[in-house]
Amino acid sequence: MNVLAIMGSPRKGEATDLLVDKAIEGVRSKASDCNVKKLNLIDYDIQHCRNCLICRDSRTTEPVSKCSIRDDMDQICIDVLDSDALIFGTPVHMGYATGLMMSFLERICWVFAKPEKNILSIRGCPLPRSDRKRKSVTIVTSGIVPPMYRKLCNQAAPLIKGVIKDSLNARTVGDMYAGDIEHKGVECYFGKAFKLGSKLV
Ligand SMILES: Cc1cc2nc3c(=O)[nH]c(=O)nc-3n(C[C@H](O)[C@H](O)[C@H](O)COP(=O)(O)O)c2cc1C
Image 1 (cartoon, helix red, strand yellow):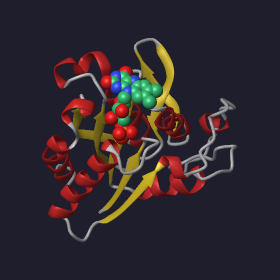
Image 2 (cartoon, rainbow, N blue to C red; image 1 turned 45 degrees about the vertical axis):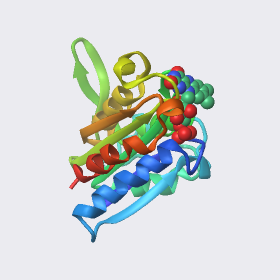
Image 3 (cartoon, rainbow, N blue to C red; image 1 turned 45 degrees about the horizontal axis):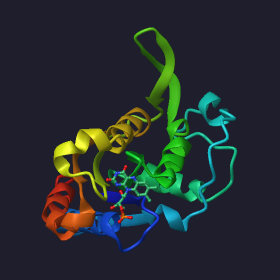
Image 4 (tube, protein in one colour; image 1 turned 30 degrees about the vertical axis):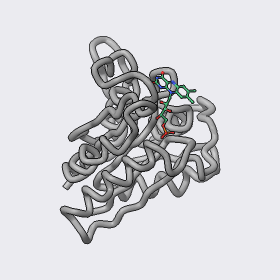
């Protein structure tokens, strides 16, 4: 099993990064022989999507179409393609996923999907280019908004869940919100992140 962890905080070694590591430990506790790759998005050259739509309009029958931009997403797309399970981690920035995570999601959106799904009267919504099924979990951290108010502050988890379902054929098997980290600290969420990771196996 190939597990790909995608960490969208600009800060390494802080809350989101630590919880993603705990989720990886959880996966390994159940599948010691799995291959795990972790991408700290901050370390990569990921340019902004330019809306040229070359990827969307590609007629390729491959599971991934080609983006017009040449940067580290070339390799990252291969990693995503090879993955069976995904771990997403992002802090909320103003209630949403970080800009880093958003840039990543925009870049995978049409590369992994073709505009062939119709929802209600909307034609041309994303449909995964490949039938390969994946599992996914999402970890969201926030500085001050406690878990009881998560709905007010967490647009990140539903966004990630939607994009990866529509583009990567990935089913979210669990998510967690680690809120109020500034007061509660992050350690109290370690157990939850570990359990979440183990759900991927
Ligand atoms: C630009 C920015 C916006 C933020 N917006 C929120 C917010 O809306 N609600 C909140 O509770 N925390 C907010 N935070 C705090 C982060 O969510 C918090 O510090 C988080 O734990 C950071 O994760 P990290 O430690 O992995 O970097 C914001 C932080 C930044 C830098």
